Image (cartoon, rainbow, N blue to C red; front, top):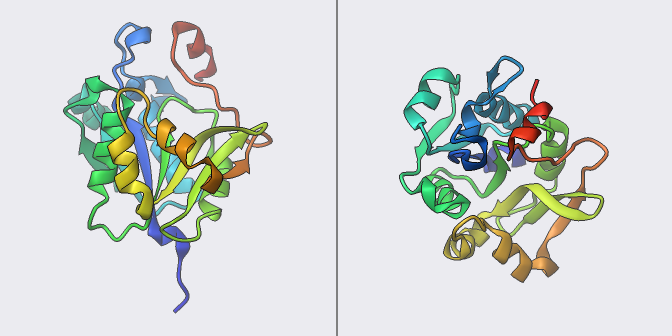
Length: 200
């Protein structure tokens, strides 16, 4: 039986933020193409080839569960979501323990310009549990990012505030493989009222 590398990589969607700069509207619940943004983002991970998708929820998690169709996804509650992205990354990685996943492909809910084509490129660069891969846009590191499980303890230890894995990636830059995606994706964030123009 041939090994299916995609089966070893879990999609990990960070969708817990409260949208402080959007007047307290959680980004997961913003509407995009007629559905909650979190539903769109989870669908991108699936379309790219992630058989298993874990979604980290925080702000108004109950409402997200009610409004978004996240069938088949593992929903992970992060009670410490107000601490920032680092807490969501820790919660998401912890949720993968014991699942058989050998890598996590991490994406952010507020980047709808990054579709399945870019995610699939990063996924295809996976080799084993020591893999460390990131999408790049004109040579600049962005999302999604793939972390082999060998890196999870170090990432969890370094993730604090809104930093996520930034410090870990900086310290391990020599091992990080960049996959150029500027030709298939736009890495803008939905952070402010002005950014809402990107949503359809």
